Image (cartoon, rainbow, N blue to C red):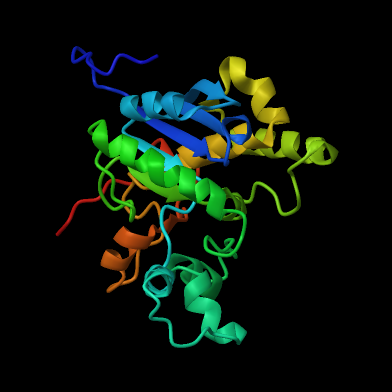
Length: 268
């Protein structure tokens, strides 16, 4: 593990990615170390308990989590009203249910044709989201600043599918044993995107065969993108506070090699 207290040299940047499932056996985590001349994978877990995720996050500058970090304002209000017996009518048409099913970030991605995330209130992704809520609370108690919008602090919500499309790593299905060759080719394409400056190290085999491990690496890459000026799509004006309640999916806008040597920003 990296020594975060070494001040004799310029400290490396550490990012962590978590492909969060409802249970540890469906959860993978990856830790990446960024140096001025490259990036290397220094840890991969294909079964990750909350304690292990927290330990990695405490060592990281930013942790990307592939899981919704909240529910829509409308859904929360609807459930509260129902709990108090104040719901006047249940929406029966699909259009009326949209704000109950999808967050602002989900609708933004759909409108911008960047993806179609699962509904955190009406799909099975809600179960990992329940786990994520507890994990975020544990992170906050441990001293990690948790901003669900990912604008500040040590956590960002990620979405590997959108990152894969942006970085042109693949277009088809890659999950499951039947798509093993596709996943392996995507891992090779990822390394080429870094122009030889991405080192999988001893984790090369597991990244090429486990789609969960691959997704965890993608989350760690997007976490780094959030630290690069204009590395991810900007949250539209007026949605910041909503994003801090509901969570916000970060989609990269930079090239892979710009994660290592980003264009410097000098404000006028």
